[in-house]
Image (cartoon, rainbow, N blue to C red; front, side, top):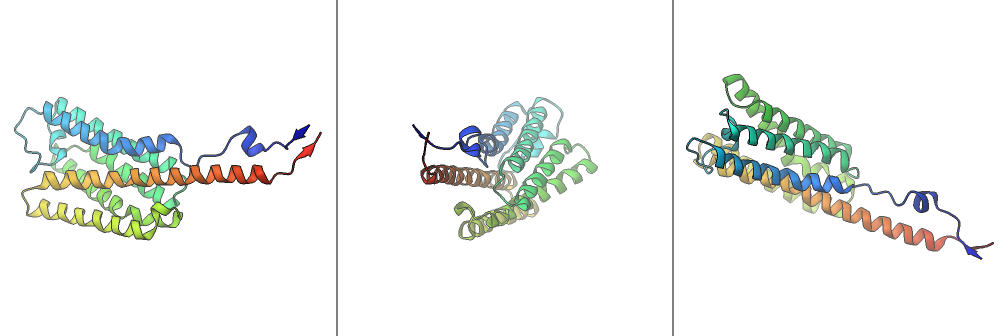
Length: 224
C-alpha cells in the first residue's frame, strides 16, 4: 500500500492564512461605511447643507438623527481600522500600529462632536493626526516585502495622499471646497488599505498553495 506520512501543519490543520478574509472585508467596509453614513446623514439633516463647502463632521455637530447616523458611521470605520491592524499580519508592526493609531483617532473624532470649543479642538486634532498617519502609512508597508508594498508603489501612493492632505489644509484656510477636499482625501486614504489587503492576501494564498504542492511532492513514499 502506498502511503505518505502525515503532515501535521497541512493534513491536520490546513495551510495557515496570514491574512484572514475579515481583514479584507474590514478594509472594504471603512470607506463604504463613511460614504453611506454621510449620504444618509445629509438626507436626514434638517438644516441647509452644502457638501462641497461643508465637512462631514458638520452633519454630526447638531443633535438629531443625522448626527447619530454619522457618528455611528465614523465609529464603525474606526473599528474597521482596528480589525485591519489585527488581521493584516504579514505587514510590519509599525504598519499595524499606524492603523490602530488611526482607528483611535477616528474613534476620538467620532465621540468628540463639534458642539463646543473644547470638543471642536479635540475633534480637529484627532482628525488631523489620523489624516497624517494614513497619508504616510503606505511607506510603513514597504518592509513587508510583498509586491504590492514595494517602494515603487508605496512612494507614489504617499505622494498622492500627502498632496490631497495639503489640498485639504489649503481649503481649510482659504478655499471654498473644504467639504469636497475632505471627502476626496478620506476616501483616498481609506481606499489604499483595500489595495494592500487584497494584494497581500493574494500573494500569501499563492505562496501557501505553492508550498503545499512542493512539500507534498518532495515527501518520500513508503510502502506499508
